[in-house]
Amino acid sequence: MTAPGLRPIPRKLLELTGALRRVNRACSTFQTVAEVLRLPKRQMTKLAFPLQELQRHLTPDARLDLHVKIFDPSLEDISKAESVFTATGRNRIEYLSSAVRLDHAPDLAHPEVCFIGRSNVGKSSLIKALFALAPEVEVRVSKKPGHTKKMNFFKVGKYFTLVDMPGYGYRAPEDFVDMVETYLKERRNLMRTFLLVDSVVGIQKTDSIAIGMCEEFSLPYVMVLTKIDKSSKGHLLKQVLQIQKFVDSETQGCFPQLFPVSSVTYSGIHLLRCFIADITGNLKTDGFGQLELNT
Image 1 (tube, rainbow, N blue to C red):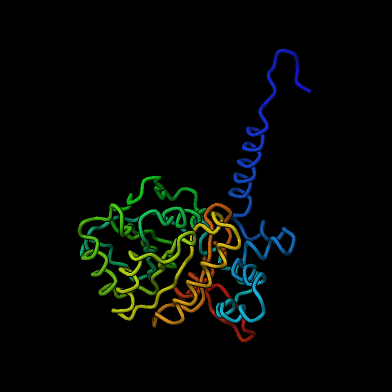
Image 2 (image 1 turned 45 degrees about the vertical axis):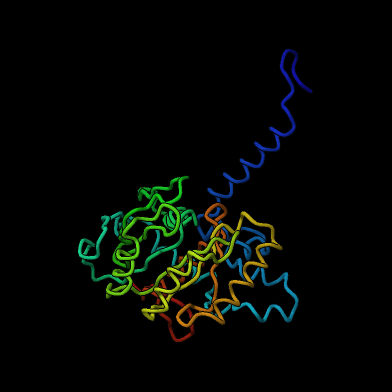
């Protein structure tokens, strides 16, 4: 019942307010593995292992098309890896510098990973989600495509360096190819390239730029599917199967398993953190096959 003199709140406004609250709750609630572990099993799987949750909706024959357990850490493993991305007094996570040429890049001995994708693929948003447990790290996110014009270097404690590469396609820097090609070809401590693909639209013609570079230089790379919260489940499944088919038939250096993620709900973020910690040599396997933090 509405109080006298007050107009009733429109139903659509109430629905919008509720939706925004749910989004804000998702953004703030599931940043840590401990919070994910308190969820019901189905919801926990959706956040921690989104590819496995998608596979559940496929027919038995179609399930064989997805490689969901090539990298298959336990929740305990994922929890251990989280400490690599958690800023503490002893584990400083910080922006280092930016560079437009490789000879301007910081000379570091740490293992390095880089993130590359077309403009507006959600690259900066993903990096910000990965660094959610280091809130003092400033990762600029812009609504305008092509915001990143330089190679931005972030130091993750004593563990590794993460590089945010300029986007290709719309509003890409004029010297994009020379800048990125030189980095990919000559950066000696580069361990893995993470190639971001918009799961809403799938692989585009412009993505062939980065794919071609990785293949030509025989670089190990991984496809990360962004914005999985933006599509219906049916559309997302269709895109995932098409991208998986492309990886299996058209690439040599791409890791067979896809990594779907959402920077809004944090779905897949914890698994991706664990994978990065693993491939940079910061997790080790003991005699029981369990991952341990390499300190």
